[in-house]
Length: 147
Image (tube, rainbow, N blue to C red; front, side):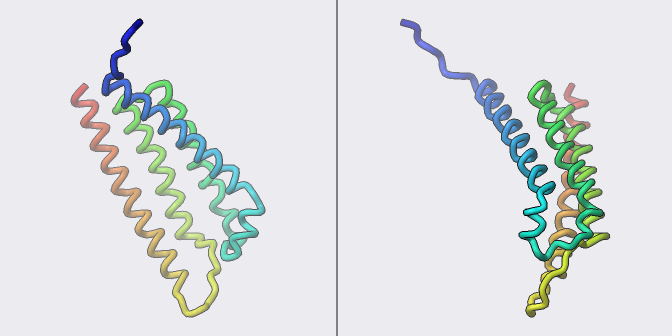
């Protein structure tokens, strides 16, 4: 009878990280299918036809995330993940800016300032993505310095 030793912390972290990458790939593929579904846009009545002016960037963002997470399954060194995340976040920044420029929404005028709320949420997303880029740049240089 063989007694198995508990998995090391690094093995458990690696398994958790791998499943996280796979989950991210699956979620992004589902999102890519949804944004390319006419049924979704018909259901979201407040989204205008101007969404077509933003969709290519949304698709690019989702595909970049899929490719990055697939790459992490093969190689997930800290410097590499930070560098690729800077690229993915840069695309997200472009999507958010474009969404603010085009603003493909037509909200009902039911006494709630939905358009203002949506703009504030997009601006907060813009700030969040910008902060995330700064953090990833710091992580990238930290990983390079540590070797």
